[in-house]
Amino acid sequence: MLSRVTESLFWMSRYFERAENTARFLDVNFNLLLDLNSIAPVDHPNYWKPLIMVMSEPDHFGSLYPEYDAHSVTDYLVFNRSNTSSILSSISMARENARSVIESISSEMWEQLNNLYHFLNNASPELVHSDPYTFYKEIKKASHLFQGITDNTLSHNEGWDFVQIGKYLERADNSARLIDVKYHMLTHGDEHHAEIVRNSIDIIQWMAVLKSCSALEAFRKIYLSKITPDNILGFLILDRTFPRSIAYSICAAQEALWTISGSSQHRYANEVDRLIGRMEAEMSYTTVDEILRKGVHRFLEEVKQGVVKVGEQLHLLYFAYHTPKIEPDDVSEALPFTGISGGRANWSQSQQQQ
Image (cartoon, rainbow, N blue to C red; front, side, top):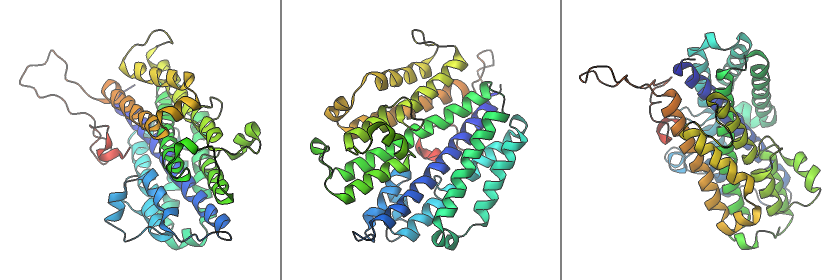
């Protein structure tokens, strides 16, 4: 399969996953404020700033909007095209990548992606603010449909494996960002006393963290009513059966990568397989106590940096174009595929906004 095709499939999947995560975070935040409205003031910027810290760059937001509130944060994360992580930007980029390889995806996949794209272009900020539940539900439903259609209409070959890699790397990165920001805020910066849930407001906000990962029901089946920070950390980071935990996402990405290369548990074929294997092994053998001793922020920073390094090596190994050595010295090296909207040569932060 051409590297140009696999790259576009990878980023199509990753952008779609990013859009769904953003929609889920915003939806949960709106519902959180409804739950807190009767017991606490909810007009404080601290209820909106974490969304920007998780999904985008606070400095860029600050250059465009005077304050953190429902209207500015929603506009930035949903409609602002200068924010490459906004829902509209993500779906637009997913659509452009799909369009560039339309012969390699199913017509049902294209139809579903195109429908969501036009739905977003016809939406307005007034619609979101008047009925946020319906708006975000439509995006999440569209994402779930797209994933189901992809699994059932796309051949499970190398292209499908790259779709899985994009989805699960993005999911691991988003979960790490969410847990990092929310954990620090809800423990008030004191990780040594993180086992204490201070009051009903804290309980509601910890439940919101679980809901942001669609994890509340699955969590309760294991821990019943024991909503403690340690239990939540163990579930969202280390649980190997929940599809949105970091450990599950890393394991799923590893499986897809090893399927492509033929690597195994005791033999890796390339650098990207070695890196993802090391991350999976750490997830397998670490404990919540060890994470707390190291520091939650430090541990999650290592996870995020690990995802970036895996992505960089993935780009170099599978996506970047290289000049054959038999060519004359005066022939310049072929440029990597720049993808839709340009700049794909560099994996890291510049245009992909990891």
